[in-house]
Amino acid sequence: MNLLGNPTIEFCEKAFDGIIKRPFYALSNLSYLMVGFIILDRKTRYSKPFGYIAILVGLLSFGYDASYTYLSQLLDLLGMLIFVNLLIYLSVKRLFSIKTKKLLIFQIIAVILGMFAILYFKSFSGDFVFGAFVLIAIILELSLWKAKKTREMKMWFAGLAVFILAFIIWLFDANGLWCDPTNMINGRSIFHILTSITIFLLYKYNESQTS
Image 1 (cartoon, rainbow, N blue to C red):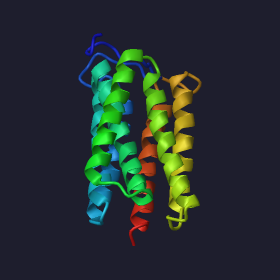
Image 2: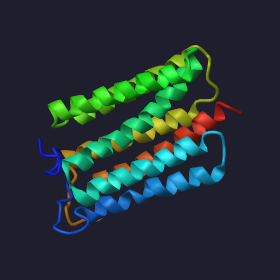
Image 3: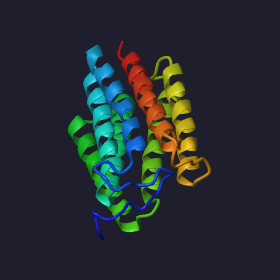
Image 4: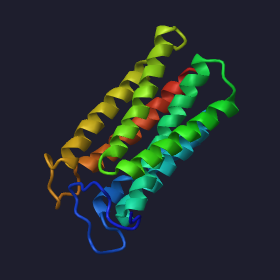
């Protein structure tokens, strides 16, 4: 295993020999930073966790596109898992009576096991692990809705719709179905922009549940 070798997934934009290997993809990560700072500026109950994690996701994804190594790919996935686990944490706390410490320990162990699975199986295993966590987050939120423990869900459904659209576009890029290596805007760049919007919408949704 060569952590400094090339990633296991190749997207449309080809890596260059330079300080920033994939500049167009890297630039699109600024959307996460913008959303993160916008959220932090609101100074609400959940502005810090959502804002700081949005910035973390952007920085780790930028590191992935700048360095183009397997290690940076893993860190990029870790950032996404941390965000999804924030959603899981908030849903579980509203759905069940469970101590914060126990829940956090369980989630940390789950993320570590997920990362080990990605290291062991490689290839597209990160997408399956990430998808499993996303599915858990969706099931938990729908369970809250069914149990009538949630308020207006328009923001949540909007966030889910934007994420699904982003993932479809990501698949087009990853499989070369929509690809122009010379174009500044490609599928993965749009994925970054749309998922940063998803973060903001889900922040707004979770904030609405506390008012």
